[in-house]
Image (cartoon, rainbow, N blue to C red; front, side, top):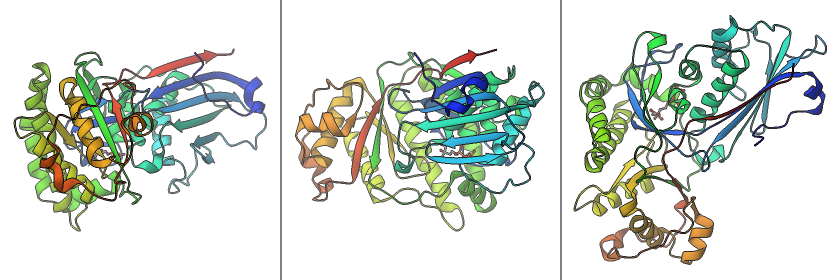
Length: 402
Ligand code: DP6
């Protein structure tokens, strides 16, 4: 299977290496928020995540090492979706952020540089997301993880790829693996790396459901948000202690025992705690909107007899839900009844439900009366629903031409 993105014809004959990587985004169950080192991107606390399925959401990045044709060609040219940037690795213009942070990119390159014996070669990178960046789903984690893999393979880097990805974006280090992943907090760069806790097939009954909300609000960047939190919040100190001393162990135990009730509760508590810390930031940061808060209430009503669905929110209003196979179709049916009552079940599965489980049967067993207050005329607050199982490791292809 040819995964690579095509480059301009004029570099075809000059290409000596072509690496392509597909990576999926990850969703933090215990969140990373705050750095102890801004340059090295070292986190204040450890975090744990689930990687999504590449077939539902992914970033694909291709990197070509190309022989230089003339001295006027820029050393680095990067296409990210429909944007383009070009510069030399010794550029002093690090403030401009065009398609990705040049500063972070060069830091990654410098780390592999000692293995880079091809100073005369040019670097050409193309990266595409299978999901619109504007829909507010974190693409920086999958994008930087794919980039780190491409750079590592192109330059025969023998070190830890998650350390490279972390230099691009903290959460990207966790997208270097499939399954359940832990990123360790340490003040030493080589120890602050990600490790897989459990592979993708460990808990096959687990589902991740993403509700993409109709919200075109521009997100406040996580980088700026967490910096402000560290500078101004009192609560963050308590959060770091809580995560390090208790939460990581609670979720690891819940995962080992496949105890969904315990697993779901700690995920919701950690998401709530993270958003409380955002609110304690001065001036406060609000990532949730009214629709997000409504889903939180809905989940708690659904869970009246025990935790069957858990929610989590990153630095944006979109909802990440976790549930087991036993409750999936019941919960999706409920969402269909409340938010998509204006489409038929067939049209819903066809147009609004992005999933490999297109044969899902909707079962309306939940008494809808309990949810009367969520019913609304403006049936457009959820744009679509993505359904994913736990995803596998990144896919990589490498071609050498000389
Ligand atoms: C809320 O990894 O995007 O999603 O390291 O500055 O690039 P930088 O930030 P980023 O922050 C992610 C924050 C989060 C929680 C998480 O993914 O753990």
